[in-house]
Image (cartoon, rainbow, N blue to C red; front, top):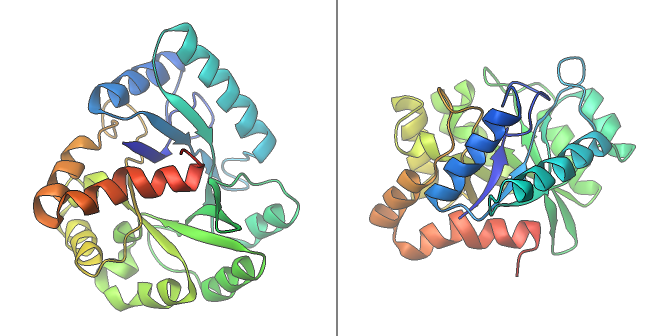
Length: 239
């Protein structure tokens, strides 16, 4: 498996608090069957002031630490970019990391606020698409507006966004409404990636195996392979 949404970098956001936790998360991921991860700290100006250069530097240091400790995990850099005016400016200035490139378009992990879909979101998306940037929307099944009205995700999908589900949502770790929404997105074949969104070893630990087993059991091995390996590999450029 390849995990495209993690908060394992130590001390940069609300994820791993130090390197010991980061290494424990890496070991847990490998034990669960993950071969590569994208480190995706929050990019949220005024709260988490991470930039592309900073994240890439931390990612290189983390890869070196993994190699030093004999943990066989490949690291790619990215960021979970908050949908707001300030990040659009950062994107235009080249200060935001992309997960990869597919068919000539840069792939951006984009986060909506959990409580709602902001006014102007469709214009933001259209601006990105006009810049040849395809948004991969993080955990839409956990957005309260989408949980209450499933149709609210449709304009973004129709515009060309891809969707990343959280593995824990699929198996019910985030409650019944999030699970119901995640399964409906799977039923309608709208998901492109499943990732862990791991933050620590206690409340938000790594672990995609349970979700992969669930998807394989309910939607078939091909769907599980696509969501947990093939599409993530395509995004980060793993052959």
